[in-house]
Length: 334
Image (cartoon, rainbow, N blue to C red):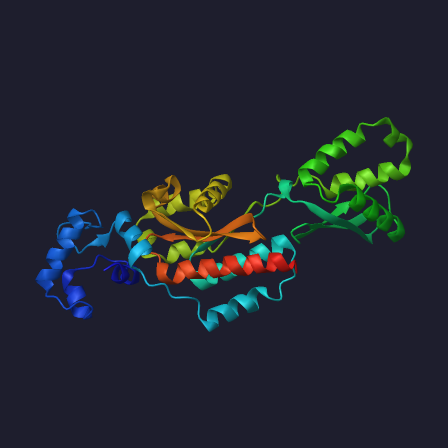
């Protein structure tokens, strides 16, 4: 019954189930069974003459107890490897590539919550001159995450000077979180000796730019495949639900909270359906989400948002596979 509705996006009648050959029961027997399931709250019907559709409760029982998962096949694993295996491990680019692969494989909206940069522990920092008064700063975390960006400097630095500053800042700040480093930098900049020591002043200028809080301009959430919503029959028939969905996807903080709240249940992918959360109830959707890690430490979450009739037997193991793959790449640090 649930599988038939997932495929058709339409109410399912007892006659359809009889013709499918799946059940060795008459149409009348199936009709009575469906009526009983409706009384128990597992099915409902849009109007009196229609077939039945699963309720949120029905979907939950299907996902937790009845469905047979379909692990990713060789072709899907090859797509993951070809889409991500050669991707340089610069975190933002890698997460964007991961979200593209996830939406291509599942046909749903992919969402990834990036690690909280303030609590990432620094391993090393490197400065490289690329043009006059322009320097690329590369930071490497204890988890192997690599971040890079272009900064403009007040002075023009030689490669030798930048190497000296790189060594100095790495020795001074390695093993600290970026939040701790920013506090230490504020304190150092207030000291009188900074204004009297040109070398210290230059090092702190570069450190300030390298470890600046980028939350206002950087990304904490990656969303890919929003256009897939337009292909779903339930949204094509309900313009107001479509509007609510797009508005909700623009609320970054709310999505990040949804993803991180889903991780409280443990290591397996979490499935949130309809009335399970304010977000999925408002948008009439379901969410499948899992964590990605570095060692035992959870760094972020990735998953998909789609209609409640999402193809769970295929989507859940795909989300889990992507979570394992991202964790593997983080552990390798490459």
